[in-house]
Image (cartoon, rainbow, N blue to C red):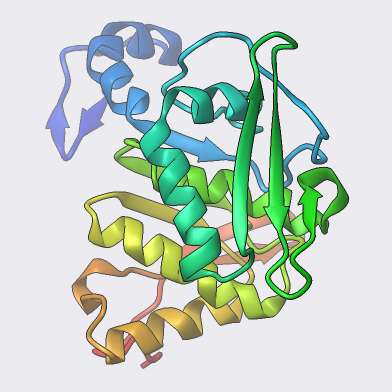
Length: 229
């Protein structure tokens, strides 16, 4: 068997896949080290998030390192607070309260309409789902993968989420989004028409499914406004 990358033959003929990974690991590890992935459904919100005293570079696939990530990244904390308050207008205030003695962090949202200060565990499930994605977009990861980010979110927030991804892309991040939401696509179309995102920076692929599972991946041809041709 001959392994090829970009039609170039690699010096690893007649090797198994595990051997290929081992041989190429010096080239692969730096690539994946700068890549962040978040699963579609995150754990239920907690009243208190445990602080383990670490300084992670990533929040984790299930956002399990979220508390320590916030604790060690004050710039991310500020950006997340500004996004919820000023951009998405989902809160009047967002607080991340740490208790070093007890080793936990509490996340509080002040509702814009009532002024009530509410723990994230008592809010709608969507808050705990969108928070890790906001944190990820403001992280230093160069490549981000989001799977079905619209789950548990009101359709009115799908466009807000798309704007978040656009912000990350315009800041230099490569963002891959697997979505079933037409609202995300509509938002991309509108932002391109408004000149807030370059058409060349967007590619849409459609996954065809059959009785035996995935049958193919098609690149959708679109015009300058991301309208299907």
